Image (cartoon, rainbow, N blue to C red; front, side, top):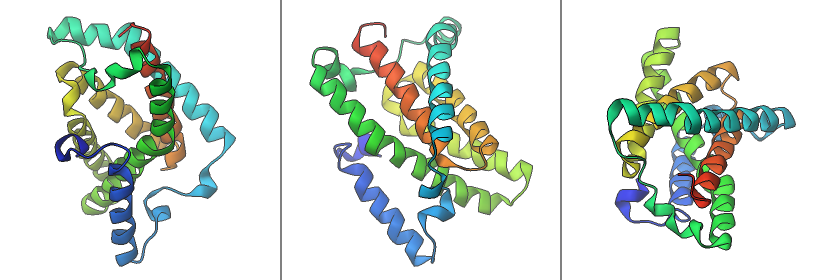
Length: 197
C-alpha cells in the first residue's frame, strides 16, 4: 500500500503494474486476461461510466454520506492528503490528471482486474463464487483506503459493492469502472476543493 510504503502515488502504480505485467507474463497471460482490453475502450463505456460516477457522487454527497455520519457518529472522511488542492488550482488539475491517467486505471486493473480474477478462480465460476470473491476484493479495496477514516471506509465499501455489480453488468469491461471511478473522484475532489467537504 502506498500509504504504508511511503512511496509517492506517481511512482507506486507504475511499479505495481510492472510487477503485475511480469506476473502475468510468467503465467503466459496478459492484462486482457484480467479484464483490461484496449479494444473495450469505447464512447459508450466513457459516457455510461461517467454518468453513473456523477450520479453515485451526488447520491453519496447528498444522501448516503450524511446518513452514514448520522447513524454512526463517526467523523467525516479524513481528506488531509488533498489539502493542497483547496488553495492551488494547478495542484487540483494536476491531481485530476494523475488520477485519470494513472491512479484510477491502476486501482481498477489491480483490484477489479487482477485480485478479483484470482479470487474468482479460487472460488469457482459460479454465482456464489463471484460474490464471495467480490466481497473479499471489496474488503481489500476498502482497507487500501484506511487513511480516510471510518465513515469514508463505510462509503468506500458500499461503492466497491456497487462497482462489483457494475463489473458484472458490463461483463468485466474495466473501462466502465475506470470512467465511473474517475468521474466519481472528480466530483468528490471538486466538492472538497470548493469547501463542500
